[in-house]
Picture 1 (cartoon, rainbow, N blue to C red):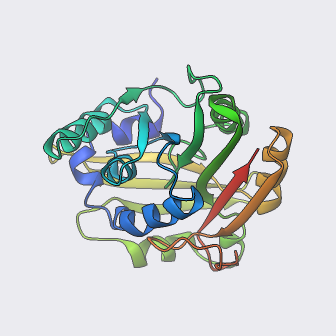
Picture 2: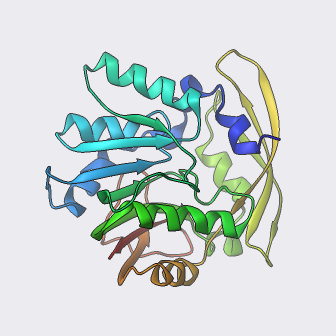
Picture 3: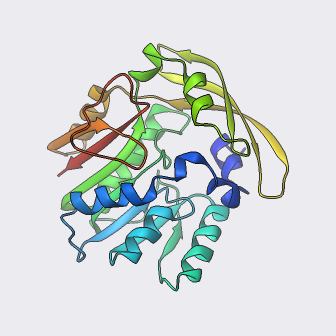
Length: 253
């Protein structure tokens, strides 16, 4: 049986690029460049690349980057966009819990909930972190964003989604946040690329900063920094607070 995240992305490439949360690509890539010291010799992998917005932008800037996603529809859209820009990019279909790479990349990015933390169990989410780590060389950097577990303790997730919602985008209605598992159960309503409306029962795992640090330390990362993740404006100056819906994680091994 297909999981909710597979159903959501199986015919959603066109609509996905209209979502408000996809509008920060340029600023986010500016930040990634800084983190990578503008080193264009690096081999980078974008996990959960979706329609390829970060992959394409970084390729345009001269970086060597491979895009990986589980959704054929998202990858198709990414390939079309790259072709329009005359860019040669490898967009590969893989499950982030089972990646074929080993010691291959100098850096990995995984932005905007690209797989992690959407999996149905904590073990599966951890498999993603494990597989990305395995894909990286011994000295490498891993930059990703994930849902901030501090946020729903102080705020309504519904209110957050309402403020960012656009008319034609997906709409979320929380069914409750489970304090024992830090999972938000919600109904997501969205219209696919053919104009059909769908309702999906979803759940997403929010993480405490200390959990992320512990998971990454257990995988051999020795320097872990966690910041607030502001759309299109990632910054090391942005200390994580309860106001941040997402956190930005930069780990080095």
